[in-house]
Length: 210
Image (cartoon, rainbow, N blue to C red):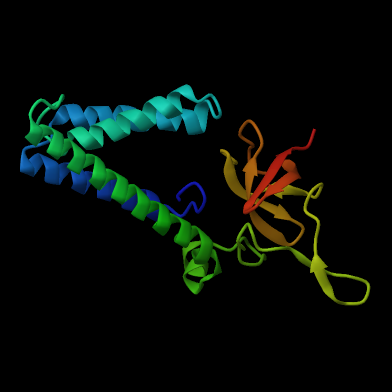
């Protein structure tokens, strides 16, 4: 969510939630520093996948597995299940993790879908100087035609300028419009001319104009 809507709120909330999770497991006696180290290594691998080696895959898969393993181990006192009680505890940990993942997915989708259209969005995101409020990436650009009516603008091929670094998501300006965009390939610095190459649902993919 923080990558799609970079306000800082979602990053801080995520850090606090994971800190409370491991703190509660410490108090319950099921987690130790090993689980925390595994979790941090997993987050580091995911960060490498997103910011340093996007699309490579190895660090993303490894980081995701380490995060999942650390969360499961934090809810139990054993590594390998032996008794029936161990298997019951393992299944309970996995079920809780799956339920939390589903709930997170639904909440994240709802926030990403409806928050950019709400009044709260205007208070969370700064409006560029002299510009209009940022709009959702899936909201069509409307321009008047010869008859004065508004029609959908064909975005592919449209050129604009980045307002923030694209790593790979960020903001770009196309005329008087400010949109969420995603870079195709390497990161793109602010103030770089970009061109829309394709639109994939809510994603507007751009590349650097050479």
